[in-house]
Amino acid sequence: MSEAPRLGVLARWAEVLPLTPETPRITLGEGDTPLVRSVAIERELGVDELWFKLESSNPTGSFKDRGMVVAVAKAMERGAQAVLCASTGNTSASAAAYAARCGLQASILVPRGRVAVGKLAQAVAFGARIVEVEGSFDDALVLARTVAETHPIALVNSVNPDRIEGQKTAAYEICESLGDAPDALAIPVGNAGNITAYWKGFTECAERDFATLHPRMLGFQAAGAAPIVGGEPVADPRTVATAIRIGNPASWQPAERARDESGGRIDAVTDEEILDAYGLLASAEGLFVEPASAASVAGLRKLSGQGTLRGGRVVAVLTGSGLKDPETAESHATPDVARAGATLEGVERALGL
Ligand SMILES: *Cc1c(COP(=O)(O)O)cnc(C)c1O
Image 1 (cartoon, rainbow, N blue to C red):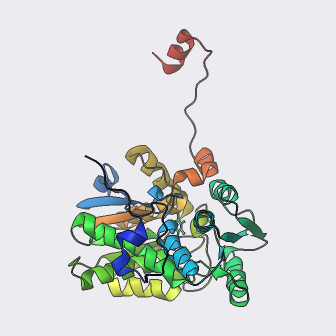
Image 2 (image 1 turned 90 degrees about the horizontal axis):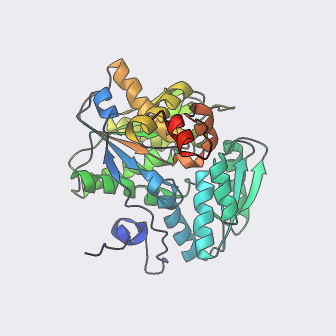
């Protein structure tokens, strides 16, 4: 039996996206990511079911591709020949990939010295023009917005509503896989576009009778970059989880609305809690994610420890691949490495056989 080809987000979800007959149906095979049941952390948390949405399975290794495919297609429909974004890394990797695919120029503004090496390597490989800004992500985003207002270049950050539209399709996929929405969704929060997009998706699913439930939205920021939790912007955000190292989220209010309308919460987790969850996801679940993604599981463990995590069916969004950030992987765990000569005896001895 032959497998159906992967349609991609535009073809698969055309009826819920702002497409016209003129929107080019571009794709790199994004979306349709696995929803995988937990084998270990579910028991630790004491919930009925824990599922992981593996957004690392997208073409450039993060969920950003879902929104980027819509943003780039709509930009092309409007005649754009160049796209621009500010990025902590994954947005630029994704923008650069779709631009390369579609023959557009991609320019990216990244905060100098704060982007994981794998993400920058992707932007380089895809041929993006890279500008390292001496400042934070928040500074870079302000500059990108200003440049896009005054020059013929399309801004593809998540302030672009087409990004949110594309990203909401993950909520539709979850409802489709589970037959309903989950009781709670755990998600890392950086610029807060993704929690906004999921809430939009779940709300639409309920309106369209794809789901009977509205999940509680459980968002988690890093303690050193937790403006929504603290109630004010953070001038110098710091965390090992570079993808959520953001001090003034662009979608701050929509994220608060998602929290409040869903009866959820937005909480902070320390870098230590993030790295513990990061290690546990790899060693106990076989899931190698980037540190920001582990914030969702770190947050669930924190709530469970406090006795405030209700049971039921929970989905944790694992937003990006561990391969993006090999430096954290190498510095976090002590490798179990033995040396051996190129002989059978040497290898057997090294293996303890
Ligand atoms: C972008 C990103 C986030 C944060 O998403 P926001 O929409 O900015 O809140 C989390 N994890 C990864 C891997 C990301 O690339």
